[in-house]
Amino acid sequence: MTAPVRIAAAQYPIGQPTSFAGWQGKVAIWAADALAQRAQLLVYPEYAAMELAAIDKPTASDLHASLRAVVALGPQIDAHYTDLAQKFGVTVLGGTRPHALDDGRVVNRASLYLPDGQSGHQDKIMMTRFERESWDIKGGTELRVFRTPLGMLGISTCYDIEFPMIARAQAAAGAQVILCPSCTDSLQGYHRVRIGAQARALENQIFVVQAPTVGMAPWSPALDENYGAAGVFVPPDGDSPDDGIVAIGTEGQGAWVIADVDLSRVHRWRSAGAVRPFAHWPEQYCGEKSSDLPIEIVALD
Image (cartoon, rainbow, N blue to C red; front, top):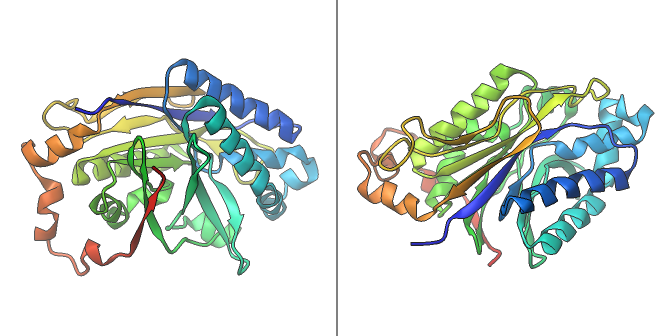
């Protein structure tokens, strides 16, 4: 039996930092709090880095200017999360941020930082209407699964988790845990993501971890309203909770939600469960096999 992994999923309140150093201090305080609770894997939410746009007030109130400002801070954001992972000896999924590709397109990038200084990233695949129509954020084109000392990790950012073929490809490539950083501006949006997370846990017989932004930020046209609760979800089978909820936070409250995750349960669910949806997946009618989706294994161990 493998040792459990303690995961901390953030219900992260969007603040209004007045300097980059102030933002660094906030993120570090959160990391230290998770470390005090013996967390090994810290999951920050989608677009959490956008609070950095508050540093310059004229920029903060302009949707596209705020995006460009945070894009420009990308290397400094990466450096800070890298330092935290090394300093505290933890694996960190940083708050996602807009990232400019060489061809000028901007994507929503989630980056994973390891204690040894290695890192990897997953760009969000599916864009919401706001991202497509108002913000001009583009979807990523590659899927990855990260082999780490903690286990095999996939990342499905917010809207991605509502599309089963993405998580299926990650699970088929070996993912034992899918991390779902999210940012939703209504309770309906939050529940769409949460329902998707629980469905993906059921279908693939894996762990899914959701980490949302919370709180009101009227100064930001991108993050003005944030609803949600962090959660860790599993298939409701065998030794799992009857509702498939390992841990759940209080909606809207800034806090870490902590859960101990035994990755050996994935094999038990799939081999000895009352049902076997992961194995039986190919028996359903579908026009495209999940095995046809390209996916890269990134070794971070």
